[in-house]
Length: 260
Image (cartoon, rainbow, N blue to C red; front, side, top):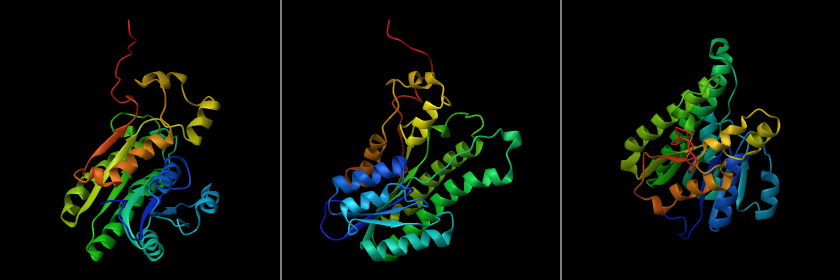
């Protein structure tokens, strides 16, 4: 799939109003000038201001709940109606909670599992159904996390959901390869989103977390968006079923190390 070909086509970014999702919307609009973007979120955030800047013909904002099959199907139908041919899907929508596992209520468990796992599956399924019915291929980028490979106390449903997204991504990549649909995921580490910055300023994050990264810093949202753009592009035409870690060496740095 090439993003530089002529003709009207669009990419859907679910969870596009903030953080990595918003950075992805900005990057794709900036770098792929022939591409339209459908940004989906339950909160508009800064999308309205961005739409005024780039124009309503480049950016469509949808308020839709993607945790249901009906909501996801609505996003695909509206996106195709407005943008022409849909060629890519990015699912960044997510949330997290902070509860001891012994005290976790069914509602708190479902709040995270529904948003991550249900949202990813229903959006992936609705998009793939559209592509198959059109006889066209496309690319999907899901969002995992480095939390998929280590224990994160008080974040049980988040870690479980992210590990599930890994399995979902790999399985769908194999099932849908025959239709020309590539399915990959990105596993970010700590990113300088507003949520992380606010947590740092409030003293909720241990300052030593920065030193746990080989590169001694957190990533910027646009650095993660760059990985999204790559996986959507024709440069990644032979990549599917991959979980791309972008974490500045956080997950591989297992012991303290300083150059002698």
